Length: 314
Image 1 (tube, rainbow, N blue to C red):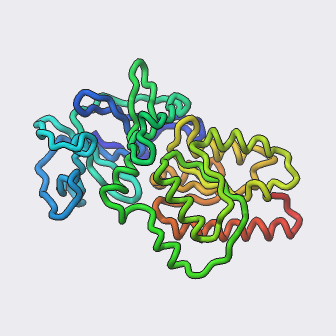
Image 2: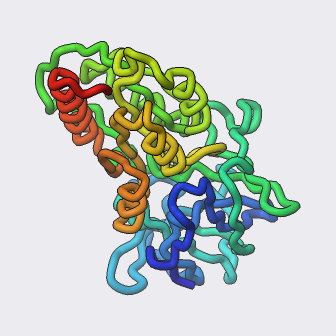
Image 3: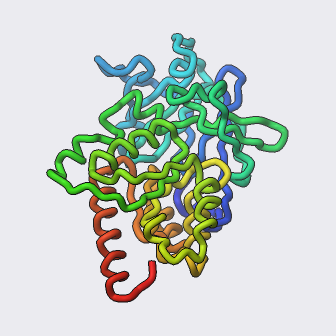
């Protein structure tokens, strides 16, 4: 079963998501269909020396070499017998192709992000957990896994690198208020650290788009909006409200639409870029390009400052 960008039929900004449900040891888990390239029968894998214990190795089904992650082993911490009917879910995010071994694929459910709850710390494990949400799919509760965190743990070099901030050289500090919507605890911490290191110290972090929007609504009509929310950075995948819906709400609001919005996501494909443009995003960047993100923040804030000096209202 193969998925292409043209098959993502969800309308932009409706706050819907398609969840692919799969099982490991009889437990239901989920992944955003937008991350899935195809599903394959498991195949022989060539081991790679000195790799993470959960990395089985590599295989080349057609045109590219793909790393295989043993998801049952990663989640349990124990070696599990490979089953002949195991499947590979081949994903595409953060500009990488990675296959995850699972036991079965159950199907796909289209739900609202409001049907996905952020797990509390007893379930998610806090910063060390990999449950990013609990979804109500029909009568089933499905644990949505934080695949970005899994990959960041297995291959830290593929995640946000503070060295990119250092490469920007000496920078002045800025107290411009920047709001960030990011549901991953790990990535939220990394973004905060990187932006602070880059000189942006006035940061407000929100666990999802709904929390940011609720706070932003209180500023509607404010005469000094730019002094309270100068720029917004949003992830796409978030419980309660996704980044496209958040961006659409901001850009459809006459009193808030001048706030620059950057979509910073692992899912910036051509199709997603088109959707982001439809809802009015000022910029769209792929994780983990933190150096590029900081440069774009610099440019958008400088542009907004010029607009204010020319008499524009931000």
